[in-house]
Length: 367
Image (cartoon, rainbow, N blue to C red; front, side, top):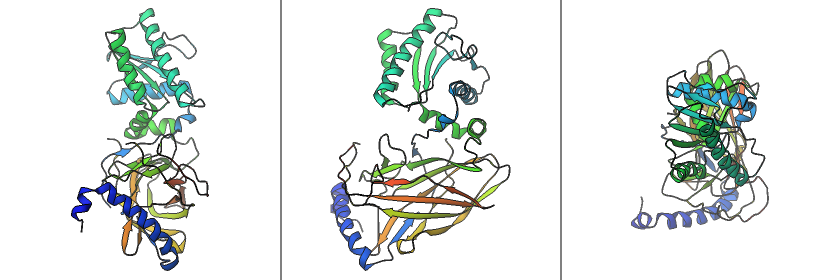
């Protein structure tokens, strides 16, 4: 039962519960070895996307081809074409559609530099690309788009709008980053397979680990596969969203999910400042920590035809003292997914309430 105090002070109540549960967790490890990890079967709305750096498997020229294919697919046309041959001067435009009157410049970034340097470089390249396109004037367009393998950065999106207003350009300007391109790829599995089908030699490839938007958990900025609790009023349990692609020429069936959990030394974590391919279902998994690795039989099993991408969710909560709690300590989740034909896919390590897997006491501040 939710008390009046809970309704009026949800964040304070959550903080009190987290503090109390950390203490109970330590006691429970000695008194209650059968701690349960409940993993829970509903359909999901939208997800917070994390960057998946699969673009490293293609080069700059292939990135241009990929962008052209995606725009043709999204706008139901075949008029987006590469401007000039590889190595030729393209006058600030890599891709152009006369029908849509849209010019696109592609920037392939390896991201070996820091975020600030990449962002400033893209701002400069956006200005110079537009200047070149206007100066050479060989094409007429109503929309200029800069597409990059850098993230779908709001600073760059805002800069594109500000640049139009400042220079009073007679066309719209947009910026699109890899996060958005990744979403489009999941909408068009045939394009995803064309460019990334068997790049890792994988029969079944895990291409995304994300977090659902309807829970209080969010990714750590600039850290792959690491999440933290914002203690908001949303669902307190982390809801992981896994995306796969079946590269085989036959149908596969997800039969079971395996999970292990490693606790790290306790630390304090800061509270942060605050379609697409639809998920098929969300699984419930009861995990007994005293048994080590546990196996959940997929019920219902997921059947995936050849060449298809698919998603499902796993909601995780710790259960002890007859209550369910969100993970409140630093730990690592290890997921493995078993399909028929002796196919197993190992997920990358998923960090909970920490940005590193260092197994020592640490104090981290809010991001």
